[in-house]
Length: 105
Image (cartoon, rainbow, N blue to C red; front, top):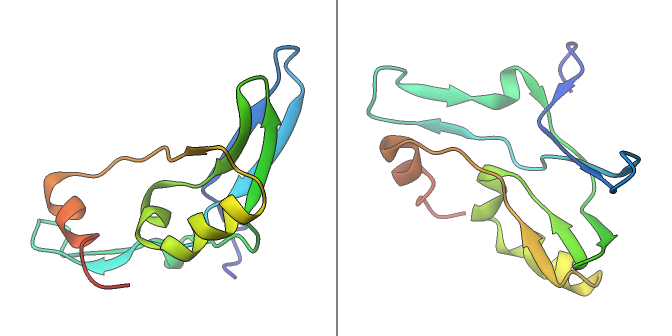
């Protein structure tokens, strides 16, 4: 855990503005890539979460994930086992970082 106490977080609010769920990204994007950055090390800045989260919504049960989590199928299996009917995956990949996500898990 980093000293900063910063996480990549997905928050879910209801129609009254009340927070219904809080999910901290489980999998840090630590990769070497062929762009001007050369590497990304989220774990140097961000804390990883420690649990998967499913929350009720008017549309069904939402399973929460963020970006690089998409490379870890066991997370999605766990979300479905917890009752997720819809999976949320907010993400931002560039062409280079998107290719970097293709490495084996």
